[in-house]
Image (cartoon, helix red, strand yellow):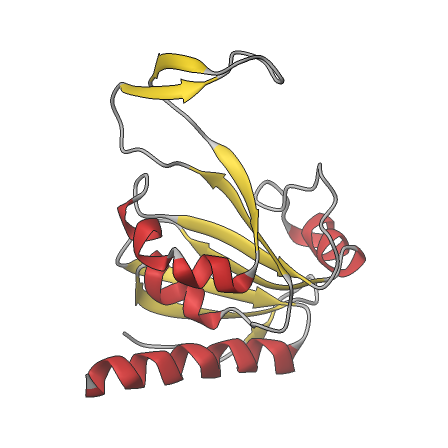
Length: 168
């Protein structure tokens, strides 16, 4: 695993590449003092058909349905994410797109589809402090923050976790 040097992007956000990541390791960059974590587009299953207890429309009664795809967003605390870290490795295709915010996130904000100035404006306007973007397990992840100091803090938490893993 290697970590690149932080760099300021054209949209004013700071980012750093981290290589050889898995979701369970990447979430160690989260700040326990920042209360909200959104995991966008979570896929609990690998590909194929799965029987799931789910309603066809809310608030209807759930029933077992066979689904091929089930994708949803999660709102969790950092502690809940860390408790579920190993489960994130087993979910979907091993990817993760998550972000952390100091304020309750708006119910309709999706950062994954935003780029450039649109992403920067949404990040700053909604109090987002950190974005974790891992396209596939065991690949390079990008950590992004509007604040270089917060980004360095995330990198430090990740490095401390990795150091303790090497000692274990």
